Length: 184
Image: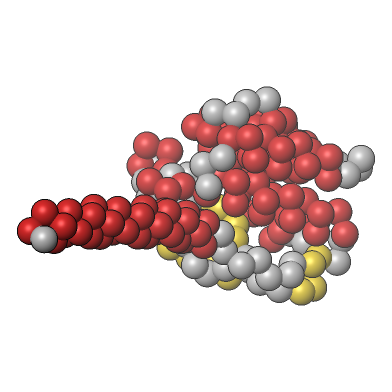
């Protein structure tokens, strides 16, 4: 009887330990999935509709915003594809601003190295800011945002459809570093 009780107790302990281990594995998987969802939520900002009187400007800004989001996520492949989309959105009729936008988008589309992409994104953003300020916005708002630490503490700007800061120059390293400088 003693051996039977001892054997049952041992089986019970092993069953309990196994059940706890199984539960911990399920919880870890759930926690990992939840953390991944939170990172995605923290890097993506809900985009509101933006329209300009000139449809080509609307296309350029939408492609630019996709590029910005890819850099926020520190995803070189996505940024490369978004830059190609931006390049394809460049109208045939261009001016100096449009030419610089095309040139910087081309630089970004030629690499998957996010640091190189971010360097070109600075010049691209400056030109996009000039473009949107010289265009008539018909729907939505744009926020000109600034990170004082970008470009080795020289600072850099970008555009967003949300006043919530999601920094494309540092991505997940300093996601919320920056401030809204202007509403366009």
